[in-house]
Image (cartoon, rainbow, N blue to C red; front, side):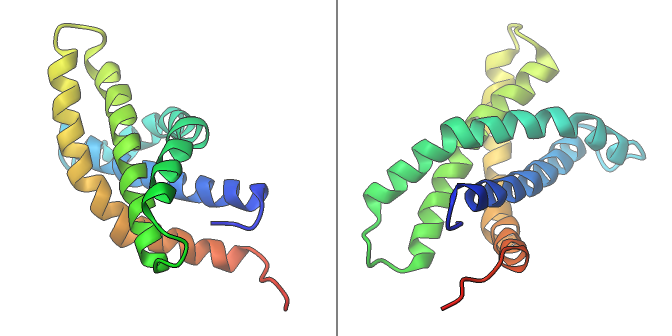
Length: 153
């Protein structure tokens, strides 16, 4: 979304900010439960995870996901179909990369890494896709429309 590179980056920034926040809360809650340290633990891990996710989104996953989606969607297809395809491929790519990031943070490059990574992929995908489609995607589009100037006719 966005009419130029600045707006496209702003949209990506908001989307990434909200997805990393939601996934951070989810993953910390999975690991530690709804403890008194949940907020602190989310805050501590948020900025590094956000930076990694934003870099991956802008330079790797976004390009690949949008490329695949645009090959599968026709010009005259409904906008919702385009949104769903892009969302699915973005979530898939980001889950694959960020699950690896999280697994390495928690078990390091140890013998446990493959199992931790595969487990994280499953747990993250089942939460990330609905989070993206039901909450973060619509919220991002709402915020984006509110803060960007409308095109005058």
